[in-house]
Image (cartoon, rainbow, N blue to C red; front, side, top):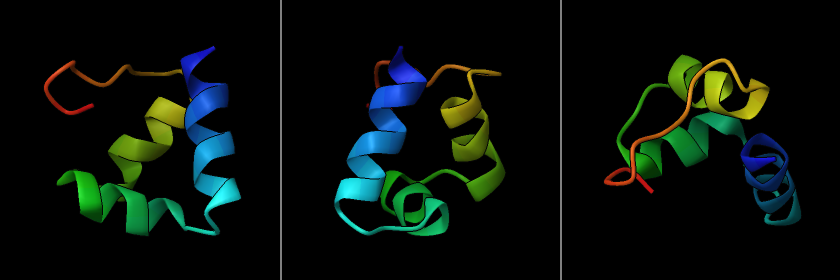
Length: 46
């Protein structure tokens, strides 16, 4: 569920995974894992 929300929010704003990751202070591969459900972000990151 969270992965769907993250992807929808990013797409609605026309951002790349790299741009969102940079804004959150994480790497693009880490953010990609959040969107695919392989990992979950910490509450501090969100």
